[in-house]
Structure formats: structure tokens, C-alpha cells
Image (cartoon, helix red, strand yellow):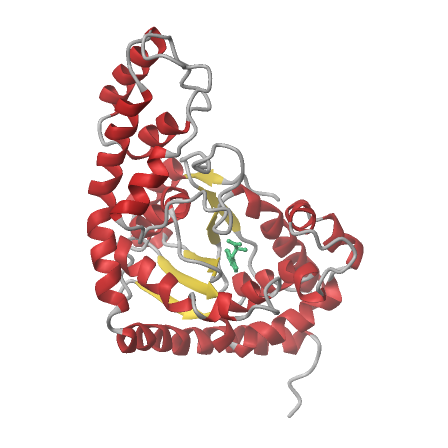
Length: 352
Ligand code: TRP
């Protein structure tokens, strides 16, 4: 990539400038489960801020969700409205952010077909994120073609909106790199700039570990805290959190590195100085895991209570959620259709 990814801090500076610097932002989430605290620190909080300064579209990626769930499609279909409710509950405002559904934008599927002629299978197989997903999902040699090619479809998502800024986690950087390769190929075929290259916007927050401290967060492994988690679910998740296994007695000095309770306190507790005091106390000895967990639990309960309430309210009016998604999809359908016309023109296919 030509441009360095820039972080939250840089955006905060950019967002303070006049609207002339406003960017087109496109981001998305696979609709394969409700969103969790990892999404919240990694990107949702940032999107709530970005919507005030930029032209932001969020895509509920149902088609991408299907690329490894075609045999269990309800995992995707039943989560579409949950994800929209999650967005609204954390403060994404549909009057400022366009929320749309990928499968409702046929131009994206068409763009994917055209772009797939510009990408080799070998290149797709080299994508490190896809590679590790293939391993962790145990596909071995039975990789769905749709899965191997989802980076092309993601390039369609991004270029379909002429997005210049894409807020993502670092696991998505290879997708942006492939997107920009497609952009350069298409532009060079056209002999002019039809598509725009995009830059990633990485969050300042480091990736939140799973509650067991071992794996990537995964809904199926039950090591996440969903935004809609009940009080009891929050309590139990915090109780079972991984701490320092060598911290056997309260008097013993404990380690805060890799101690999930402290990582979460760092991410969510509003008083950083207090968390530093707790850390020092824990490292000296004399502070028990029961106490640190109690403090974290209270903080998460307080933070998630209003989100859970709003989420429940939004989910009780499905018609409203559908209306938001339809309106956003309608606007997005037009935008992406225009990009499709431009891309077809490069291949001389606008003859009818
Ligand atoms: N691949 C992203 C994820 O797994 C979801 C996604 C789909 C996306 N289309 C996108 C992200 C376009 C950014 C831009 O989270």
C-alpha cells in the first residue's frame, strides 16, 4: 500500500478540520452473530465518532457471512437485525450513517464478477487472513469457492462506494491490499482513474482478548461478552475470566500481563489512574482476583445496561429496523449501480 494506515489519533486531527477533508467511509460486519465487546472497542465506538465528520456507510455483510455458512444459513439470516440493533444501541445514528444490507445491492455481486478476472487463484491463496481462516475452519481441500474469493467481493463493497477510508481491525489489512491491487489494475486497463484506492483506519485500541485469554473471540467458543449480554451472562463471563494462574493466595504478588481482568479494566474502566493503582497493588500482593473481578463486573454492568436496554427496545420493533435497512439499501443501491456502469464501460459493455 502506498499510504500508511493511520490511527484514531490521526483521524481525530483530521476530523477536526473543515468538512473539505470529509472522507467516504465504508465498513462492514459479517452478520454471523451478535456483536460483542471486541467489536465495541475495536470499531463501533470509533464509528459513532466518525459519523459526525464523514460520509459513513456500514454494510451488513450477509453474503460474505454465507461464504462459510451456506449449510447453516439461519446463522446469517437470523443475525441481520441483531447486528442492526447492536449498531443503533451503541449510538450509530441512521440519520448520519447509512446502514445497508449487502445482498440488497446487486451491483456488488456484478462488480465481484468483473474483478474476479483481475485476480489470480494464487494471489487469493496467498492472502494471510484467508489462509489462517481456512486452517482454523478446517476446510483443508474443501474450500468453498465463495470463501476463497471473498476478498474480491470485499473489494467490490469498498470500491462500490468509492470509499477512501475503511475502519478495520489489522486482520483486514490484507483485504485492503487486495482491493487496492484491483483498483490499480482496473485503472491501468481504463487508462484513467475510475476507482479510488482506500486507506485503512486502524483503531488505537489493541485487540481485546477472549475471556479465556487464549483464543480469538469466538461466539461458538463462548469466550465473548455480547453487547446484549444479560446481567447473569456478564457476571459469569467475568467470574470465569483468565487471570494469573500463579496467583494462588491473595498475599502473593500477581502478574497483570496477560491477565484478562486487567486488560478489560484498561479497555473499559473510566478511571485510568485507579486501574494503575489496582495494578500496582496486585503486583505487590494483597489484592485478590475476587476483588478485581468484582470491580470489572460492576464497570461492565454499568456500561452495558443502557446498551442492552436500547437493544431490546430496538429489537421489539422489527418493522423499524427493516425500514432503516431498506432505506439505507435503497440509497446504496443507486451509488453502487453508478460505479458498476463505470466499470462495465472499461470493458465496453454498456452497449444496450
Ligand atoms: N471482512 C469483514 C469482517 O470479517 C467484514 C466486511 C465485509 C467488511 N465487507 C467489508 C469490512 C467492507 C470492511 C469493508 O469483519
